[in-house]
Amino acid sequence: MTQKSTESAKKRILSGIKPSGELNIGGYAGALRQFVEYQHEYESFFFVPDLHAITVAQDPAELHRRSREIAAYYVAAGIDPEKSVIFLQSQVPAHAELGWIMETQAYFGELSRMTQFKEKSDGKEGVSSALFTYPALMASDILLYQATHVPVGEDQTQHLELTRDLAQRFNNRFGRTFTVPEAVVQEIGCRLMGLDDPQKKMSKSNPNKGSYILMLDEPDVIRKKLSRAVTDSEGQVRYDWENKPAVSNLIEIYSVFGGQTTEEIERRFEGQGYGAFKKELAEVIVEKLAPIQRRFHEIVDSAELDEILNRGARRAAEEANLTLNAAKKAMGFVTFD
Ligand code: TYM
Image 1: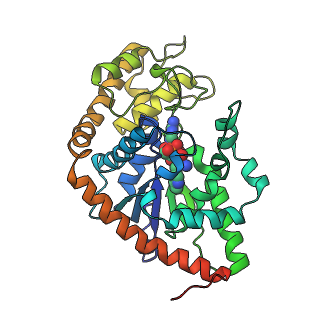
Image 2: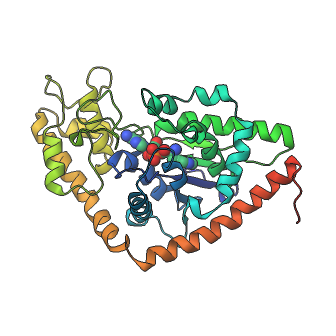
Image 3: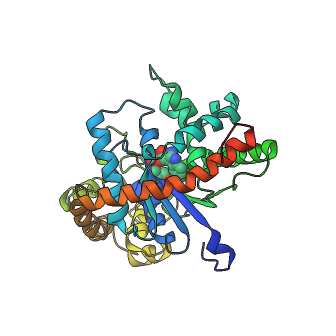
């Protein structure tokens, strides 16, 4: 992602975070911090996938609040709305329309293999059909903007593979219409695990609140959650996923928030127990989150955010409609342009 050539001027990023629960630091580590970093090198579109959130039941007032919140996190974390386009998915109708078209290109069998669908539907009653077809809408989100790169956490890579397959399939059938995008996944922080169980992804849907740290957690809450985080009986701060998954997870969190490499962190805590490590880790997180939290509260209910989202939706729609029209034309729909 550091390559600088005339080619890179044409490179485009699109990504988003679903407004389906309070944001935890996993979304920051896997996605948001990448958005902030890459916006300077690439033309960027960051959206709030609110249509994705309703694949499971949402309380209307909560959906409304969380959608604004995700947009506010984007700005608070450092995405510059003058440079990047920030918008709500539901304000750009082309997403739903191309989503339908992509459903016609996706096979039932390939959607059935999506592990996120299996996990989210497992043992549940009343699973919506939209939860099943969700990856086709996700493909539409990406392909509408001709995105070349999609920064995501590890759990989205299967959806990205499907997006690539759908883009290629469509291009082969109807002529070159879509850019085939690549996932951009960081080595460190692409899959933060629960503080209570390093075998389970850190997730807002975990009923144990001690298993995750929220972006808006107060300093004392963060300290408490970390003091209770599971470790192991060895007592050494060593990065070794196979034998020390819980400690390795904490080292990754340290690396994400403190900026040091895993080796630097190992050296820093050599000969010290987990107590000192966890205490310092809490402070590193608190320090990084404080300015984001401050800015978040300033902007979340502001007219400034409305203005950013309005402007973003208009700009996004211009781009999205170009691609949608090209796709419809290629398929044989009657268009008047
Ligand atoms: P979502 O909302 O579940 O997660 C948002 C982003 O955060 C990453 N992430 C994590 N990374 C590291 N550790 C974790 N514990 C962790 N939890 C979440 C996710 O990998 C993701 O990058 N389907 C997407 C939203 C979406 C989208 C898109 C993304 C819809 N259309 C188009 C990119 C492009 C989702 O549900 O992410």
